[in-house]
Image 1 (spheres, rainbow, N blue to C red):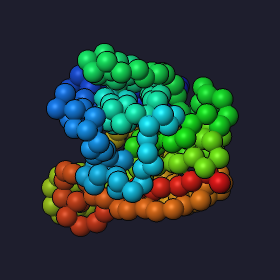
Image 2 (image 1 turned 180 degrees about the vertical axis):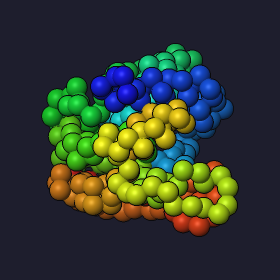
Image 3 (image 1 turned 90 degrees about the horizontal axis):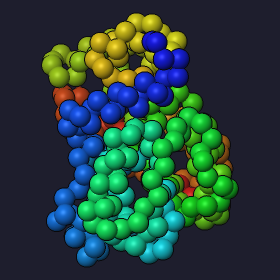
Image 4 (image 1 turned 120 degrees about the vertical axis):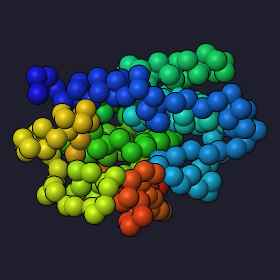
Length: 254
């Protein structure tokens, strides 16, 4: 690993995925944007299930942070519904997609390049809502992420987060049967050279498994109150036939 800052590696890796047509980098269409303007809120925290409508307050004039949420998929919807949006991402090309769609549809959005493994570049108690799709697999310390989310949210603010439950990291290949467990958790390539070699071979960046103690317990330790959750499945591979691999959570800052 030539670059000692693993998040720089992840940013460059995701840029390369965007060039290859990564599904999470394809912006919404004009037709989808118009549906959002008419009140339709279909957004994803996890691969398949839309976030329940009752998780959202009236978004008009709400200050909303899309955390590691670049790509032009969710933020245009929130902007169409009247939210004042800020998106933070560390991938130049994901942020370029956000700029492209905002110019195409003529709405204002604050676009910030930032590394969520560091202190977020915002003052305390700025946002009403944080929308954080599955992305903290690219960060070693998720406790830091939850603490920063708590800091920048207003009292009564809402955190919606998509979480990988770790099962995806057990298998090197979930595209063929039988599924064979090959990796011991936690999956941490900064501490396990074999895991690092596997990720480098697959151009998968630097990824980490996290426990529910880190993911949900970490939100509680930061001070959040958990209000709701649901599970979701992979949208490819055989593992989706057997077990949910994602959790989405709704939490509130008291």
